[in-house]
Image (tube, rainbow, N blue to C red):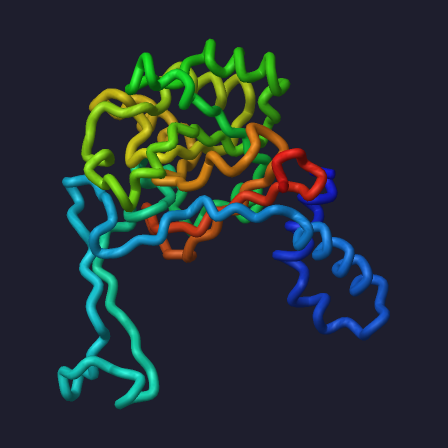
Length: 277
């Protein structure tokens, strides 16, 4: 089912524009309908936080400023009553809310957000749940031993995957934002990141915190980005997706030479997966 799901997602996202122009009854329409039915029958989980001017952010960046767009001739904000539309200006760092860190964030010659290919934005999703370890070690860093223990339960981490770290920090995003100012916090060990990339062929990683590392040295993030891989930070709702068997879709604006931007990321859980209902 997971292979059909990949086909459905890729076919639907990339081909639907062209297929919509085909004549009714065309074989491609039939295929598109079948593939769309697979997607629509699946459980869709939003892994993205909504962001606002009060969203948690690293203190070195500061909060976003969101203001109404104004008519440059009058200096007055556009309103629906007066002008028939409204719009906002957004002033914020690219690393805001649920966001992507592309290699260029830490590497002067690394790929920017517009250079990451589409096939690296639709990936098998594996989730490492370390919430059970946090009572004894609130700042636990995922280790290679943790990964090997996960594999004994779920099988080998598939090559080409997106690996996400579940810590349940995201549950405090709106109710206890000060938690995101705490350092250290549960995250990744450098050895674990290196193992997943070099030994398991993982494409990218993601986590619920605003940083990759349990230490201020940023070793894991530096190594990851300088080796050509991206990450997504401040992910949400990882408690609603299975450890394996889902597909991650991540989308972001195609900012030319962009070195970070808010994303919309979701998980697609096949209808026949035990955790799809």
